[in-house]
Image (tube, rainbow, N blue to C red; front, side):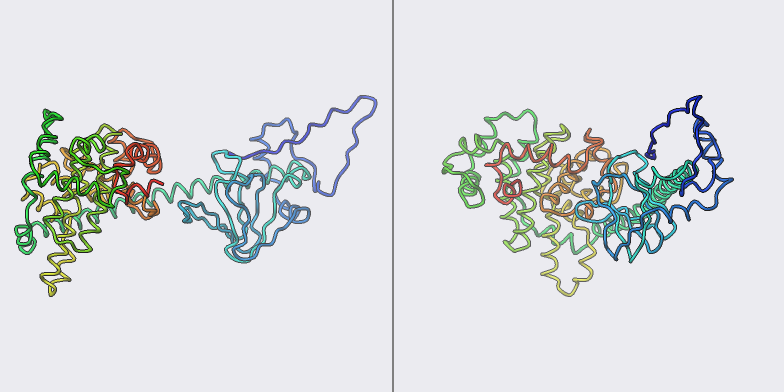
Amino acid sequence: MLKFWRRKEQGPPTASAPAKTTKTATQVRPSVASSHTPLKERLQSVGANKGNELVTLLNIGTTKKLAQDEYLFKEGEPANTGYIVLDGAIEEFSLSDGNEVNSVVYPEKTWITFIDVDGTPARKSSARAKKASSVLLLDERLLQSVDDDILLFIYRELHKSAIAQTDRKEAERAASSIQNDALAHTLFSLHTAAKERSKNAGLTQSIVQKTPKLPIATVKLLNKLQDDSTSSSEIIDLVKSDPSLTGVLLKTLNSAEYTFDEKISDVNHAVSLLGFIGVYQIIMSQGMRKSFPATPIFQKVYTRSLEISHIAFAISQASGIGKPSEMATIGLVHDLGTIVIELLRQQNPALENLIDFFDTAVIGAQLLHTWNLPEGIWKTVEHQDFPDFAPPQKVPEDIVRATAVFYLARLCHQRLHKVSENRLPTLFLNQYLTLLNWKGLSLGNVLSEKVVPNLRKKSKALPKSLSVLLD
């Protein structure tokens, strides 16, 4: 959609004073058609009289010289001027999370339209000189000073430029789609092959079998939470009945890891502050500590997993998809394969190059399977990375929604840690958002409208590492 400048209509001459015909410096020839002729016919008629329009524009127009990297216009500025690139090259681009995207280069003799084809009155992008350049300004002053033939020539060329820009973007989208499909197919084949190799690796099977299991009381608590018929009093009684669970819970809550102003002295008090899931998250995460050595790798995985657990719980609650308790558990245990690989590396330093090819998601799922965790948990852990390279149709149907929730939790966690969205695996993001009934939302919308408000409601009950990110 092009913006047309409209001149003021001249009144008809009176009968007593016939109109005089005056030829100005800019009127290089008589108008080829009446102003009452339909625009389509007028545009078509210009072709037969084309010749000196550019020369005329150069004679009366304003030329702007730009040094390399000097801006021609910036995003948000009024889109009231078109340009002809006389020499050099102009690069137009948009910004996303501080990164330049959708770049297009206009070489010499090309036209830059007033506004985007959607009719936006302000610039949606910026443009600067890719090298020293000169441009001719097609501004209001010039458009008001030329005769109809040249005005129509200008609009025809700008229209052609807009169509060419649209065609170029469509071609780029089509080429990108084909390239993405081929890339996704290749990645899917590579990843699934790696997963099969990891499943059958004797080394990993050996270390999985040697890894200590979760404390029995922790597994009991998990099973209770997964059972919809479990009452609140049963959960409290189970925690109270095991001194080790009570001790772990109260010790953690009163540590520097949390920010409560008062001392937490009993299970009932803990449940009132955290809720059942919050209590479970602490007991489960501390149970994991007993199964693995306190290495820097474990501490890093532990902190990240606890943060993602809270985010996954919030997304499950906000979307109504999946069991929040199950999603919290998946968040806690999803990266245990990384710790197993680290232990494997320490015990077999000569095989380091081979170990790098193992799939941590598969190894983590195998460990959880040996711990007798529910199938929905370990199976989702095994497929947790599928959304990075495959559409939902490639994920087993019984876990695809849980996988979508956890995928969103990982993305939101990375954005909270200031990872640029351009660096995140979002090729199939819209398809997974649709599974959560959030079609049309962006990742930013999910984070700001669904996740952060939910987390802030219980900010005191969050680990300090996560609560500081919300500020």
